[in-house]
Every structure is written in C-alpha cells, then in structure tokens.
Image (cartoon, rainbow, N blue to C red; front, side):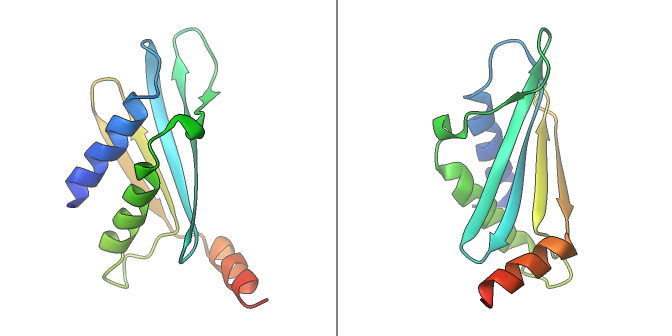
Length: 114
C-alpha cells in the first residue's frame, strides 16, 4: 500500500464509525514497541462535547494501517515518530501529524529490558 492508500483506509474506517452530524474527528496512534500499538480517538458533533470512538466497532485493519504507515514513513532513520494524529473533517480534508516522544521511547525501552 502507498501512504495515500493508507490515509484513505484510515479515513474510511473512521467515517464508518461516525454519526451523520459530526464536525471533526481524530485518531491518535502510539507506537509502544515493535509489536505494540495503541489507538484512541473520537469526534465532535453539533450537539455534543467530544465523544470517544468505540474502537471495538472498528475494522481491525486500522491497526495494520498505522503499523504500515510507521514502517513506510520511518524507513529513513531521520523520520522517527512514535505518536501520530490523523484529523478528519466532513469535507474529506485531513491532517496527519507525527511526533517523537522521547519519554515514551524511554519507557518502552525500559519495559523491553525488564
């Protein structure tokens, strides 16, 4: 898959789990080790505060999408990230933010060495 195909897959998975009147939505992924990935997220509607996604309703492919995205985008060692946020608007416009969290990396390394 290409990066664009991965973005489309993530967006489609999110839209499948959104109510009709949503205003914005996001998914946050955290790489917690070579074989560990945490995902959380939610959305806002016109009538409600932020609502968390029920991730059990998502296609499990979303985990593979973020793992593939991490593998592709970090092939060059200068592009390290262990946190990502995918923000989606009803228009289809999206934003992808990548971040390196050294504290998270240190915690993962500490746990792997126990």
